[in-house]
Length: 254
Image (cartoon, rainbow, N blue to C red; front, side):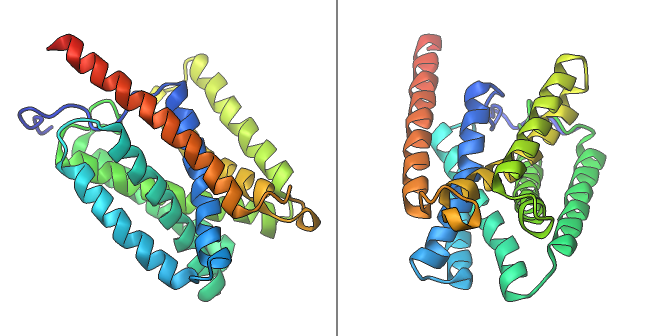
């Protein structure tokens, strides 16, 4: 196991209720913002994907250069990963005509492979010790795979399998609750975290579709623009609180 670099602290947030709230909101924004940019704003799937990839590259470069968890940089990266993950699946489905069954299976294999390599190299999948650049690269590769897989799995459940947005959100929400119960009863913490992390993506995607899609398609008809704006405002407020609290803790230790 490589020793952490001098001066580095854990690069990811503590797993708290606030963490899961922002994560779910981010996954929903990934679904709604991607739809807004590609469809409502008329940019198209290709240009939207390229533009978001560029912004994600800048955000991740900034994130990788920091030596400790910085809320606004971290969560900006997560939101952009969510949008890019959504667009990757949409491009495969809508432009390349790849079946959702195929894309879900491929992303599952990619995620499993990423976990396998990460564990083989680092002997640990815990996020409590993201202390080196290599571990952080594994972490973000895993996060991107979870978002792409979650989008594909969510679309597979709600569209291809015909579960609908409400039932899909309910099923994925129930699976998250069962994961929490299993963890409370003694299930492995690292496994429980990653299972919940994966499930929040299709839950957020189903929730986003439920809120934005027209009532004739089983949604509530809020529209992608309003849903994205509201959820982004909540994310900004929660991240702002986290940034202020982090600054206060640092000032108390100095």
